[in-house]
Structure formats: C-alpha cells, structure tokens
Image 1 (cartoon, one colour):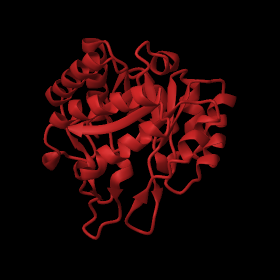
Image 2 (image 1 turned 180 degrees about the horizontal axis):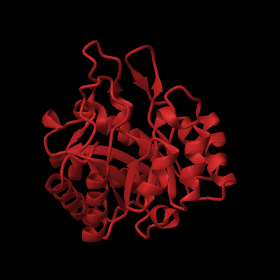
Image 3 (image 1 turned 60 degrees about the vertical axis):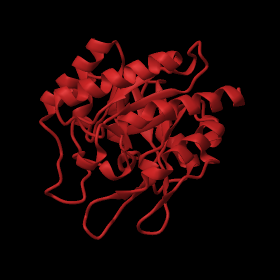
Length: 267
C-alpha cells in the first residue's frame, strides 16, 4: 500500500484526512464522500482518517467515542463504499489485532510512539503502521521507533511529524525533521492540524490556530513531505474532539488545489 500512496502516477502527495473521531455513520460517510470526490478530481491518493476512540483526553468528561465496534464497523463501511483505505489510532497492544480487522493502517499516537509492545503488536498484524513523532522527541530518535516495527517483521512504516513541544502551551514544526526522517527510508507525513494545537489550556480543552493550516501545509510540501494529515469537519465549532485546530470541510478543496500546484513546482 505504501508504494501505491507514494508512487501515484500523478506524482502528488498523499492525504490522510477526516474527522478527529467517528461521531456517527452519517457524518463519516458524508465527509468521506466529499473528500473522495475532491481527491479524485485532483489525483491525490486518499486515506480516510477517523479515530474509533480517543484515549488521550484532558478531562474525564471529554467525548471519547460512540463504542469501539460500532465505530470500527463505520470505518469498514467507508472503505467498502468508496474503495479507499482507512486509518485509525490504537492505544494498547491488545487493540492492534482488533482494529486490524477493520482498517488498513494502524496509527500509533505521538505520546505512545516509544511503547515497544504496542509497536510490535501493530507490526505483527501485517498492516501499514503510521508512527506519530512524540512531541518530546527529536526527529532522529524516530529511527528507533521505526526499527522496532521493521525488526518485528513489517517494513510497511510511515513516520508523521506533528510538532514539538515549545513551552507549556504551544508546538512548533521544525521542517528540518522531514528530510531527516525521510533518510531512514520511510515515507514522512506532516500532520498539519495537530501541529497547530495549543495544549494544556487552563479550561482543560486544547486550543488551536486553524488560521495557519495553509501556512504549515505549504511549508510541509515545499520541505518534501510525502503526505499530509489534515483533520476536517463540516462544522469544527461543534466537533466532539479537536475542533479548535480542525479545517472546515468546505475549505479543503481550494487548499488542496493550491498545494498540488506547489508540489508540481518543486518537482
């Protein structure tokens, strides 16, 4: 699958995009349908993203999901309906085999990227493993996370840059990390929207700077990212998770059109 994403005849970057968390079937299907239409029009390889459960929440009353099996079945329906691969997060080694029955790519959350048992369990499913770089790690340290998956017998690895902790309530993107992580021999994705989070807010809800989504994405393409990760929602103001840094869905196609032009220019 990685070869299909990275070596598309169009030469475009690939896209992982969708809502932060599966909120319901109708919502997921609408978003998937619209992004599939956009990406087909622009010849961008597309993977639908949706977390079946959010385990890392600031407050105990934060929304975590609609039920694991229910959400995973929605992800499988999205894939079967639109003929596209899907990606979701896993949080424990025990979840790897379960999620692998429904999705094509298993994503390791940034805070868990050093968890050996989780990485090995994901590797052993034979699925593509997308490892998000911890906000606390250098790009160079990610070679060791990737090697755990490879040494467990799975060469299907992607690495995702999602910002580095800067002070207590901000993140920065060091674009030098993109070519450095690419040198390990794995595709590198830039998580545009999570890079714009503002964590540890006093109210216990993460903030964000969505007005900078295009700036971060443009720079990522120029720096050589193989793929982009963008969380999007029909109305981020009512999203049940990460609405503060998500892109409004009706803005996505124009953004992708401009990013394709940058990709063409640097090629």
